[in-house]
Length: 301
Image (cartoon, helix red, strand yellow):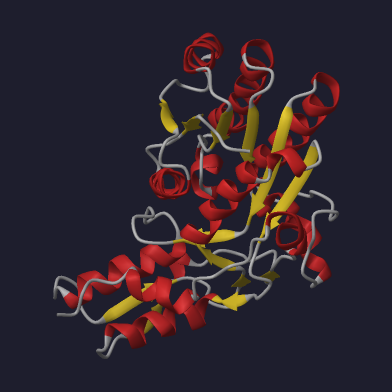
């Protein structure tokens, strides 16, 4: 598929900037529309889709972190579930041939990670927190809408992804911010941390947005119920990632456990199987995570 008009909800967020760059590189003649409507305003979403007349909508807008969803659960459901439904309904009613790319989260697998294996898309969604529940609910609801209403839909379940510009609410940029403060001599050479033993599957954000673009390119060949994990297949201990960043900073930095940052870890290890994305999209991660981590640190020169 060669898209002509691509609308991105949440285009001003962390992932949105990288996605815009990827789309511009792949389809320089396509019009990319910043979907600025509040997704909890159904009428505004309807007007946005109708006036934009897109042939692709990439739905990024959402409450993006576990703590934010925990603090405001009603809003998290309104945005992540209600907003996704609003976008899908507007597409069905105004642009029925439009492709919807829905960005969910591998957090939705939750308790299924207790199997200790790399999960593929057949693993049950078993969320363990409010954020994951909102993402699972949206994923399942959109799948049902595609079956009932003919919505052209591709659902993604990306695992952890990071890169320069990500909010300090996430673990890797939080480490990077402390290291930057140490290098600027505004913080003593000690990083305060919580639990470092959990292992997670990390990707560079640029690899993730490339998958979204590939889904558009391959849209005509994809099944109407296509679901894709985006994962490296390798669990990485959080503490090891921090050690890599400290080594890249090139100066002595101590690590100190801060009891206030400690949280119980229900899932010690979470990683995914992305064979479907390799098979159907020709996608696999290309950027080494160590390169990503170095890019998130200030220039030592």
